Amino acid sequence: MDTAPLSPRNRLLVLLAAVAVLAAVAAAAVLHAADRAAEKDRPQAGGPAVTEGSVSLAPDAPRMVFRNMAWGPHRDELATVPADRPDGARTASGIKCLRFYAAAGTGICLQSVHGTVQDTYRAVVLDAHLKELRSYPLAGIPTRARVSPSGRMVAWTVFVGGDSYAGTNFSTRTSVLDTRTWDLRGNLEDFTITKDGRPYHAADVNFWGVTFADDGHFYATLGTAGRTYLVRGDVAAASVRTLRSNVECPSLSPDGTRLVFKKRVAGLSPDAPWRLYVLDLATMRERPLAEDRSVDDQVVWRDDRTIVYALAGDFGADLWTVPADGTGKARRMATAALAPAYLGQ
Image (cartoon, rainbow, N blue to C red; front, side):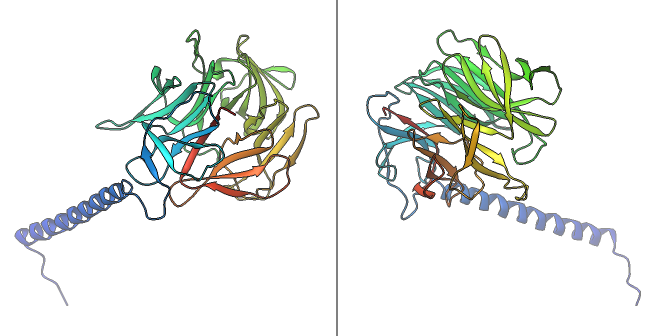
């Protein structure tokens, strides 16, 4: 049966009706997103208790300072609990960080700055009272942060391309800052590289996951040609040298003898390729830890025997812990928390 063509007036009415439907769908999506965002500002039943108060980075009492992920008015703020009560009531600072670390009274807070068109990011150096000392613009999304044991040196890593370490299509920028002189090494890619005993140059070099041995030396990950390497760096010499392959996001033990790191294990999913290993620096022998899930985090040492790390949780992330010698089993120690630092130990 032939259908008569629509008149110009009817075509216009159909077009207007379609536009109205699309506008209604868009409005509903915006309202849903706004309601979801507002929901995160409301405390959830059964969640950790969080109240506003004073938070210190001074090493005068054993405490854990971290990014509070619990829904409510203090979400994303730095919060603190006693070190021996990680699941206890939290005191929130009012200062928001995406990534955070602290040592010896110095903190590094990687923040988002909300703009009318898009968000930008900055690195903020904090003193023991959470007072801002200096800030630096960031070229991408914050992902890693560390402070040397003395509190003098600070490092951070951002993504400037791609969005995950799991694949190979990403680019990073890692910076090291001396908080005594305020000398900023803005990009470790400018450091001289010695790989397998020979000078190395490549356009695809990336660095991430700094962990400080002292104020002049650090370990980190070097990525190039589809592989990753553990490197030891010298700040004054602006140089790094490779130590071994297949090491990501190393974290040095308080006694300086071991590194815990992410290792890519053959046969695992490309989206979850890692297992945690501990490396003895004297013998270069490694062993797996008793955590059989893929951990995309740079672990923190609770002490010389225990590590802490984040895994996805109901409210963003939870903190888990496991012995650093390969024994025992993983257990959840705090819900809705991320980026811990232990002070006053």
